[in-house]
Length: 81
Image: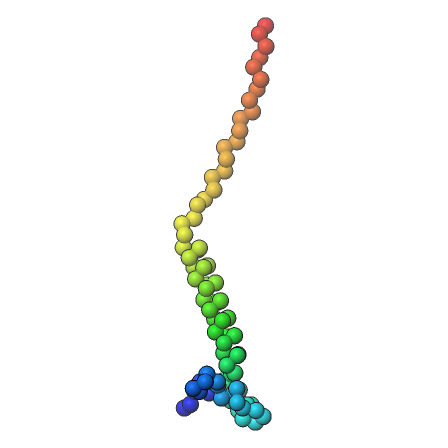
């Protein structure tokens, strides 16, 4: 079985050269152009980076906020009788 996305010596994929019926056949079997694969690789990198960030943030110990104690109203001093 051949790799429909194999690079040649200049980095082009078969679909970069193909047209018409040949291009349709390559696409039917998962063929993509070099640009499509590059964009897909960037998207995978972004997804992995996002997942890693979520996992790291999710693993940090949580700090539960403690409600501030309710302030007791301070009454003014009573005047001397």
